[in-house]
Amino acid sequence: MSDPSRSRWRRPIGAWPAVALTVAVLVAANLVLHRWSGLLSLLTAVVVSALLLGVLRWAGGSWADAGLAPGTLARGARWALALIGLVGLVYLAGALLPATRALFEDQRYEGMNGGELMLRVLVFVPVGTVLVEEIAFRGVLYGLVCRARGPAWATAVSSLLFGLWHVLPSLHLATAKPAVTAVFGDVALGAALAVASAVLFTAAAGVLFCELRRRSGSLLAPMGLHWAVNALGYLVGFLLR
View 1 (tube, rainbow, N blue to C red):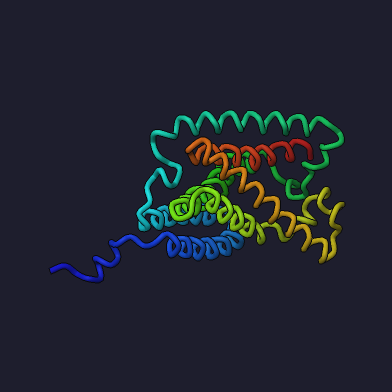
View 2 (cartoon, rainbow, N blue to C red; view 1 turned 90 degrees about the vertical axis):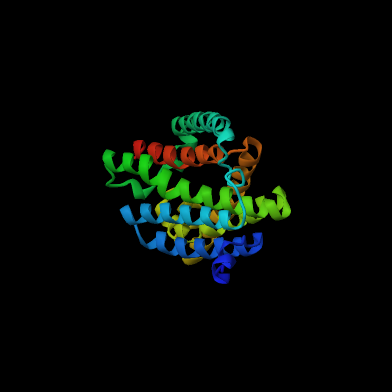
């Protein structure tokens, strides 16, 4: 005789309950990742990524819904490499022009050495940031909502939540980057406006990432752009200290 409780767990859940479960996991993960650093943050990112893919699977989703279908990976890799090269050229131009060089200044680079930079660029950005965020927002959330309501809704929901994901990391943005401080000041209202601006900016970036995911058919395309924006930004900021 079959066990009714086991059969219930094997039955796929609906897309919207899966979205709600995904959001709950991300809220907890955001709080944890904001407090933890180093190896613990990397382990958390990997565990959360696997857990979210499990939620997608429980909802009846596939690798294609996550943007990770084997047949799309080569195309996605080509998109990723092209985007990395484009970001590199833009950052190089920005670093060479006096009018935009100040945008790369960041007090968080003070005291950082070359080894720490490489660890951040090659480990913490791709695993602790890109992996978990792309699987969560352009992979699982996008895939779940797209199955239920189509790509427009998937882009809107994913991008809004991606913007809100950046509230905690943006709390000290107004004091860490001189260019931001010059615009918003270092008072409480300026800090709040800096956070709101960061949320809006990252939500808009989320729309671009979703469109890359849709057009390429692969999660590797937004992953490549995401890594390039963050990692090459660290590299240029470090070199311009």
